[in-house]
Image 1 (cartoon, rainbow, N blue to C red):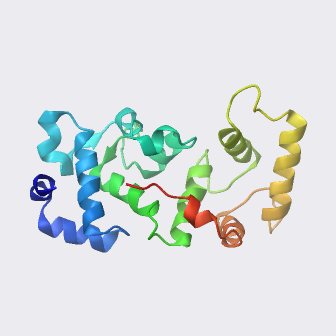
Image 2: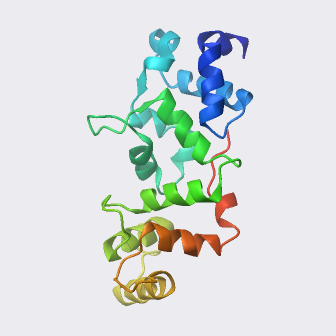
Length: 190
């Protein structure tokens, strides 16, 4: 750990602690894990490097996550649309998924991850994609059209407070606030 700490400037470490829900040790471990995703010759400059999405998805914590591509998309600040991540993007992702993050922060990012078309609402298409991600894409686990329609209707009846046919962020957060297990299930552990 001494090696990775020397490559991460002390003032940056303090700033990252202030701006995230991560401890000093968690930030140093994150830096080490992020650096290991880079080619050896780029590791010295990990703070200014970007890791391709394909490498981020090799992390065991994301590999089995059905929302892995959406997670990378939501946390990436890449201008090219390639969903690559900077170290700060990576820290933001780990911070939101940490046990210390608030339920409001977790639900805000969960909403963004589930909003597949990035339009600020969860509509029927988003809900269908969400259900398909959760149940798997296999033929044996796919819901029939009638089952899918009934499930989406039930979700909307339960969540769509203003009855506009979509779920907005505040409606989503209201539903999540009634689910005490949500925050504990929305995490990635280093």
